[in-house]
Amino acid sequence: MPQRAVLTLCLLLLLPLPVRAVPPDVESRLHVLESVAVREHHGPPYGRGLVLTFKHLPPDPALTRFSVEDARAFVAAMEAAFRFPMDVVTAGPLFGSSANMRHPARYFRLIDDVHIPGRWHVKGPRDEQGQQVIPWRLHQGLVFATEKPLVLLLGQQGHALDFSLTGLNVPVVNGRFVALCERLGIQHEVQFIPARVEEHPEPYFVLNPLRVIKCIDESRCEEVTFWEPRHGVPEKVGHYRNVVGMKVDPEKIGDANIFRPWGWQGALIVSERFKLALEEEGLSGLGFMEV
Image (cartoon, rainbow, N blue to C red; front, side):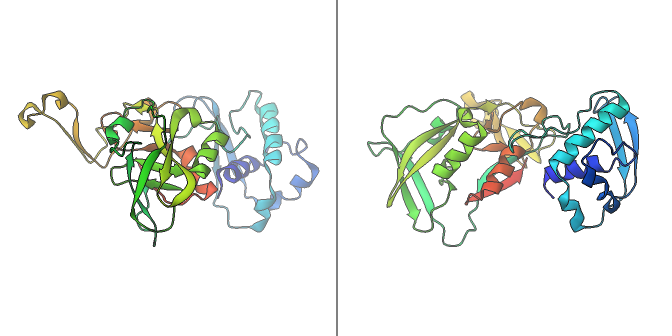
């Protein structure tokens, strides 16, 4: 069920509150809801608010008729009844809605769905001189300077995708991906480097995330190993040598929506909000692994 619908239902479960503050037709629809116990809450982890205890709601088509406008009215009723502002729901655009909801942030590694039948496989990129661009240059969170579009070759012909990873984990996206980032207002978090894919005249872009965040939660990873002096690479001593089952610490990420984790920068991480927007847009080629 969409998050906004769940929020609306939770608010509408507050049957003891005055219904005179809501649209007249809402009261006639309350029969589909079961009774709920409501009590005030103070303290961690959520501060001041309400605790709702309610029974399982059986599926009922009537529930779909409740709107966000109904929810707003119930918020006003709660504020009046309990005499303090409630951080319950913030209705707004898709990206950034429910800003006041205090729930653990979730993050996902953005990967390439290699199981799509008949899909293409992209190689590269190369610069205008035909030289391979070292992927490391796109993992540092720095703007990549180039005067001409990069060149991407096809390792395997097939259906073009909205999102792909080259064999060296360089993300390749099309205009639909770029347009979504612009609508969500997160284009400043990435650089879209113009690129040409052989035999495909439409524009593509190499995606270069501009944020690198030290956020790997070593205690929750399956395995973490480090470079040591005995490995004979002095400049890497103390850095990650391998990370298995990577997990991140949401408290260290802040407001980033797309970034690379420091020390393991071949990985590309997105916020849950961005993941949901990508899925709703229906972009092809995407895979996700929760971290």
